Length: 423
Image 1 (cartoon, rainbow, N blue to C red):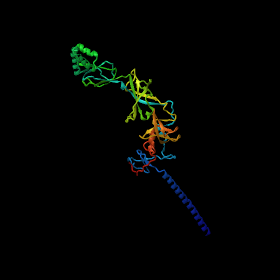
Image 2 (tube, one colour; image 1 turned 135 degrees about the horizontal axis):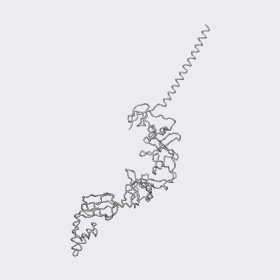
Image 3 (spheres, rainbow, N blue to C red; image 1 turned 90 degrees about the vertical axis):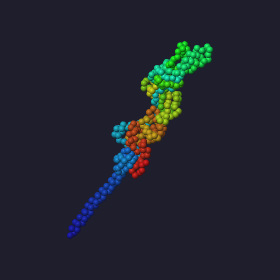
Image 4 (cartoon, rainbow, N blue to C red; image 1 turned 180 degrees about the horizontal axis):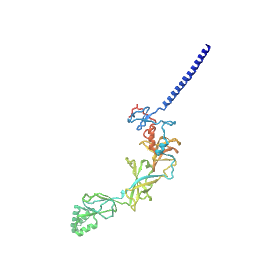
């Protein structure tokens, strides 16, 4: 009997021990499961819109802005600061993203490069006008660009007034002994119509009236514009031709408004053309337009070039280089134009914040003058900063998709859950 009681006691103790082991392990597993669930909650999948990356929602659905289906948002980790984001090395290689370490500008060989064209020197353009009313009978100049000489016949004009004046001269010539005043008045009238002394004497000598009267060039040069055609009626003073003297021409450049402070009249400028790449033409700035072109945001800069051999043709593209050694400072930071993104009011670049890993962050900067294909940075960068100089738009697109500060999204980490109103 005592043995049975002993066996029952041992069995009870064994059962309690087995129950403890079984339920105790289950309890620990439950705690572990509960712990794992809390970790999942901290890394819950978020959903965003490919067109409006500022939208972030905890579940899939439609974008509250554009209605597109939401896509899984990339999860960020590694303790990045707000505004920072990473790109994979594979993405960097595929997008050909390149960076450059910012260095201080040097005052050795900095030049300002301007683009422009050759134009006629408007001060050397003469307008050949008609000195009497009439009808254009014939033109001896048939195309623009034709060379003419002083005294060369350009056209013939039929003028009823000139026919009458010639008849008056023939009559007055026969009465010049008795009425010299009348004779001289008629001659002077013809001289005002630019008839030469030789032409007037020929009319007197032959006593013959010319129906079609010649028009002669007053200057030598190149015909830049033909303003009439045969059969046209013209008034006294009507322009017939424009004749340009191309011994001097203008090189006209467009300078951006942030370059104006670097320019002044009398400044030396070296000019090269595509037609003569090995020839450098020396000139000086002769004029800076005081009015800004509001459409192009540029100012016209002009230089006069000597052109005795006629090498420089109106319409040629030219480039002008201006040395800026005296304008540059040793502490200036100059960055490539390709690194800068414009938003209309802001200028931004992307900084590589980790020299070992492709981690980036947007930064606003203040720009100064434009030099060649770069900008002087007044504020926002320091010597040694590493910035994106190739593939900048690709990096900006990645920032937008990750909901980070970007060119079009000024506020970092702004999240729309779909419950907010969108204006």
